[in-house]
Amino acid sequence: MTVRVQHEDFEPGVEIARLQREDAGAIVSFVGVVRGESHGEKLVSMTLEHFPGMTERELERIAKEARSCWSLQGVSVVHRVGNLKPGERIVLVVTAAAHRRAAFEAAEFLMDYLKTRAPFWKRELRASGEHWVEARGSDDAAAARWKRD
View 1 (cartoon, helix red, strand yellow):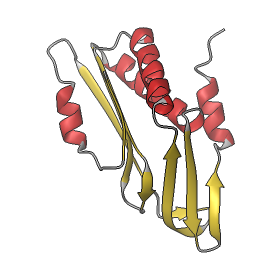
View 2 (view 1 turned 180 degrees about the horizontal axis):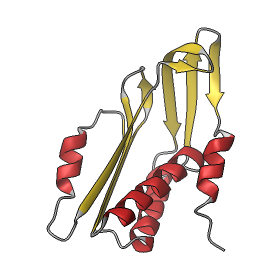
View 3 (view 1 turned 90 degrees about the horizontal axis):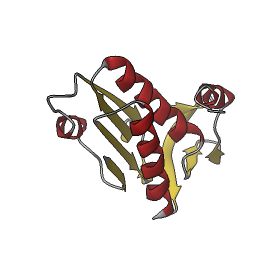
């Protein structure tokens, strides 16, 4: 299991290769990229902040949860922080499992968590000024399907 929070860019192919193994019949990856527009305005940049130490521990916790719920052979979560420009990679989630359904569902679970509950704070710089980013209702609805009683 790999969890990293970093300023530097990452290479998706390298991260995917790290999870290749004989008992993993499926490897699913998701790469999130900073969009060039937000709320109908051109996006100049996005700044991501986090609480060092706490953020990594929380990402490790949710990656372990995904690994146990879907019997994954491997999980990688790489999330960037700092100032990012449109077109730059922001997040990578890679899951490896014996079968594709587990790999896809675990990757979706992790991304839904990252979009709604992960301890990151996002601030966008647009033509109209700086704006804090909050989870959208559609993101919350997607994350709600994973709640366990």
